[in-house]
Length: 301
Image (cartoon, rainbow, N blue to C red; front, side, top):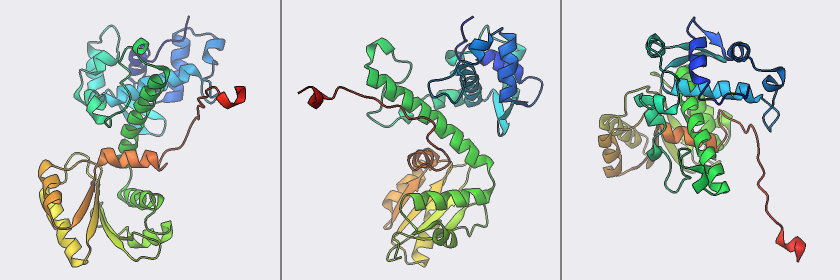
């Protein structure tokens, strides 16, 4: 038989997790036997040569189930069925696919087109025959980045508070602030409530400084009161600008307050945070590089 696509694998992957925590590599082996895949099919590699096609599709099936809250990630490479997943298996549909997952608000939010920057590529739901090859590539790249963004934020929220402090330091250094990681680390990392409060140099000589505050919230949004408190801290430090980082988001009142105050306060929410992490290779790495070539007209002149 042909290797099933990742949507076909969603229901089998969910069922494989029904008896408790399981390792994703165990699911790959288990489903390979259940589906009767041949050795050749099980060993077929992706073009990168780093993973088999079947394992890749099983991993994507698990990832999408997680976006819909049907499974929970427990530790590295392991997952378990959630209460919502058990409810689905209690009265299972003929199959689980993207259309089914979109009945869950978390997955629908994940797929929101509005999450993409303006001018981005069309979504994967678009008819591929209507797209140019480069549009298809950009669309797939946007989908991969969106999925990576969600996974990064989940990892940050699951990590200890001091990890978030180190993350903020590493990101700011990667963006060119704070001189070195050691110097930035001395300026930041003075948290008392799971956040980060401190001053970081805007340049290597310390001629200008930025006051930074970070709040690691899972659900609560930063309020207008939080922004006003931060503004007061800027006054005490005689700072003219500040950076407020959160893993959640900012309430409309908080955004309006930041715009109206006399000091420049830049707001970074969870979505922008993960986009910056991807841009500056913080917590992620390049897995594969695909070269797109075109005719060298000068060669034929």
